[in-house]
Amino acid sequence: MDAMEAIFTRRSVRKYTEEPVSEKEVETLLRAAMAAPSARNWRPWHFATIDERAKLEEIAEFHQYGKMAKDAPLAIAVLADESIEPTKEYNLQNCSAAIENMLLAAHALGLGAVWLGINPREQRMEGVRTMLGLPEDITPVAIVVVGRPAEKKERADRYDPKRVHRNKWEGRRED
Ligand SMILES: Cc1cc2nc3c(=O)[nH]c(=O)nc-3n(C[C@H](O)[C@H](O)[C@H](O)COP(=O)(O)O)c2cc1C
View 1 (cartoon, helix red, strand yellow):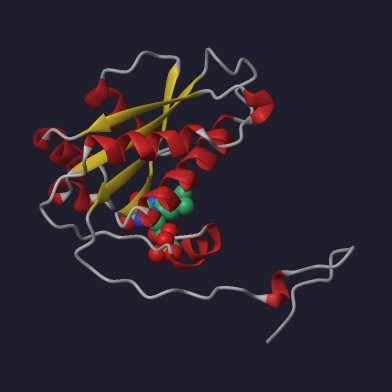
View 2 (cartoon, rainbow, N blue to C red):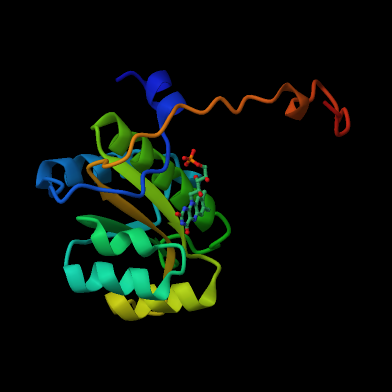
C-alpha cells in the first residue's frame, strides 16, 4: 500500500479477531512510530507494549471509551519522557506524530488500530501510571489499541474547501 492510499483509507478499527499481532509486526509499528519527526530531533518518547489479558482488561476499566481493549490482542501506550525534552513544550506534538505514524503503519500492514486519548485526562493518566508503574517524569500521552480487523470501515473523504484560507484568514464560510 502506498502512502497516499494508507492516508486516505485509514479508519479507526475497534473490533478485532482473536489472532495475535506478530513480534515482527509489533517491531514494524514501533519503527514507524520512532521514524516520526520531533522538535530538535529529541525523540522524547517511550512505548509500552501490552499483551497481558489482565492489563488489556484494566484499560477497558479505567477508560470509558476504551472498552475494545479487553478483546484486543495488543495495546501500545505512548509515553513522553520529560527528562529528554527539558522544555516539555512539544511533548504532545512529538508523541502525536509518532501515534499517527503507528496508525498508518498498522493500516498498511493490514492491521486495525484506534487511538485512545489519555492526556490530559487525569483519571486516565493515573490509570496508565498505575498499570505500568511509571516514574514521575514519564507522562502518558495515549494508548493505541491494535488487532486484526473484524469490521470493515469505508474510506472517508473529509476534504472541506471552506476550511482552506489563501494568504489571509477568509472567515468562516457557509455552505
Ligand atoms: C486525540 C484523540 C483521542 C481519541 N480518543 C478515542 C477514544 O478514547 N476512543 C475511541 O474509540 N476513539 C478515539 N479516537 C478516535 C476518533 O474517534 C476517530 O479518529 C474519529 O472519530 C475519526 O474516525 P476515523 O479514525 O475512523 O477516521 C481518538 C482520536 C484522537 C485523535
